[in-house]
Amino acid sequence: MIVILMTSGFQSESCSSTPVGDKVHIGPEAKADLVFFFKIGVSPNEINEFQRTVTGLPGKSGTGHSSLPGVMSEVMFYKGEYRGEALRFKLNASEEERTFVKSRIQGSPLIFRVYENVVPNEITDIPASEKAEPLASPSRIPPRQPSKVVIPGE
Image (cartoon, rainbow, N blue to C red):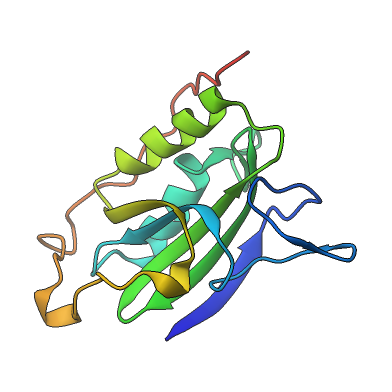
């Protein structure tokens, strides 16, 4: 069973949304552009840093973050013991922005699996936790250091 934990970055546009009146449907039962799962054992601090530096841009003041260009929303959820995110792009997101976001996510050592254009509730190949692929140890990966982010099209 998937449980929604939070949504962020919601705006009025979505690439794969089905408008219902004035609302856009999001959540684990709605199709997402990208769905990804963190490896078992990834800490909440590591996930926060991932959101700040991989799917987000660190704030100029050193606190907080904003979404990468082209990203409309992210919904966090659990599937079994795996924590996941369903990400949607803005309607006007370029192919370059989409590829940029996807490559950042796929390049992270914290990520277990990435899916495209799927409904999170319909993913059936997530293994039981005893067959999971955990990270090696609690001190496995230092937080990613902010670096100059080159954003496509700028």
